[in-house]
Image (tube, rainbow, N blue to C red; front, side):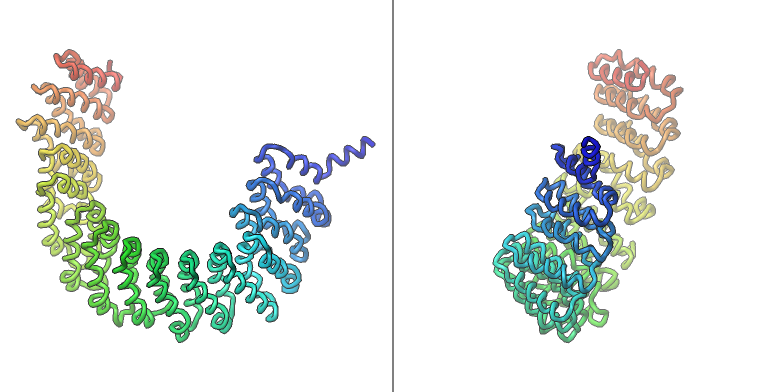
Amino acid sequence: MAAADGDDSLNPISILIDELQNEDIQLRVDSIRKLPIFALALGVEKTRSELLPFIIDIVYDEDEVLLALAEELGTFTPLVGGPEYAHCLLPPLELLAMVDEAIVRDKAVESLRVISHEHSPSHLEDHFVPLVKRMVDGELVTSRISACSLFSVCYPGVSIAVKAELLQCFWDLCSDDDLLVRCAAASNLGDFAKVLEIDDIKSQIVPIFSNLASDEEDSVRLLMVEVCVNIAQVLPQEALEALVMITLHQAAQDTSWRVRYTVASKFTELQTAVGPEVTKTDLVPAFQNLIKDCEPEVRVAASLKLKEFCENLSADYREKVILTEILPCSKELISDTNPHVRSALASVIMGLSPILGKDNTMEHLMPCFLALLKDEYPDVRLRIISNLDCMKEVIGIQQLSQFLLPTIMELAEDAKWRVRLAIVEYMPLLAGQFGLEFFDAQLHSLCMSWLVDHVYAIREAATNNLKKLVEQFGKEWALATIIPRVLTLSKEPNYLHRMTTLFCINVLSKVCGQGITTKHMLPTVLYMADDPIANVRFNAAKSLQEIGSVLDNSTLQNEVKPILERLTQDQDMDVKYFAQEALTDLSLA
């Protein structure tokens, strides 16, 4: 008797039962992950006759456990005897596909789709299709939602009569009273259409598509935009206008901004799907309307597609359409009240330069560029400057600079310091766009003049720019052009300008390295430790602390330490404090 009990305790099912009764959810999940091991121990027959019925009994556990179970069952076909017995896995997955938690349902459906490919045509009709029908007829909304994803995998492998039944079932789901079911059906309509014959798409799917596109809920209608792309890709060109474009026009003018937004977001995909002729006659007017839409979100989405839409236009009519139909609408967005719309336009409009060529760029795009460069919203200016290279390649740096420099100078001398700050912060980006030679000739003096601006924020930004410029152009360039000008500020009568020298040395030391810092910048810092203004002296102490990390130990001991020790005896309390801080930080105390 004892021996019998011992044998029972070693039964894989008994072990699994014990593990799944543990209160720790993670341990139960780990047990589910070991199901293949239990199945191997049992063998294929006992897996089908004992393990799978047991699994059906535990489909009421925590969601984490059920998620793991749904995933494991998708790989179980070899463990139940191969494709011939794959249908044995359908009952537990059917139950999992009807639970409340969406992530579990989705994983169960994913596993069902995988297993469907392992069914023979006869098994599809005998086992898989009846499962789909049961789920379609199920009272639970979750059952009908999951069923929507299964049509595309079973339809190709069944007989004509069963195909007709499946089409009717799908139509029933598309007209379901529950919104979530209709949304699920709409989401899967495109995939279903891909496995149908052209005639069935025309006779069955297009009517379903038109019906859903006119649904009273915008959640359904917006899903049909992507379906429109899928259907347009498989229909012959002559059928597009009659079967799809009418619905697309309705979506582009839908009363719900969310539907129009979706159309704008998918516009270039639609353009690719319908081809050049339909684009010219139908999509260009629709694109104009979207750019002029009353909702800023729609205008943003349409603006972001401007460059790609224009690039995809047929070369036969591209330039004419852009100049006469697209650009006039786009130019209106320059003065749009919403800054996000202007920002979206700024990120793409310069990309039209290579398409339009030099003369059209100068005549039509340059005014847009200059207007956006003066925009009050920082992100607009940043995006337009970030795309200068598009225009530079087309019209050349000399002509671009003739238009750009006056605007930069105007912004750099603006009475409002925040406007000046904006152009200061973009200077490294401009330098990278135009290159070293242009920067030295046209922008270098401007950058250095900001170091003595009467607003601290400007001086600080200009100081931080120096590091970025040296990273771009190299420390040899810094030694020849930047450092001499910075060091001359140490002799300025205005103590604020002298302090700027120290701030510049702090950032330059990090990119110039030990040699240049020790030979060219350290002497100035040591000299400024004797400045008559206490603020300068304690900033000199802070600078010694800052640049100490790039100096060698000999320099620290012989040159830096004596100066800091002297400053600890200064009459000013702040000077004493920062000198002592520097000594401690540099381990010189």
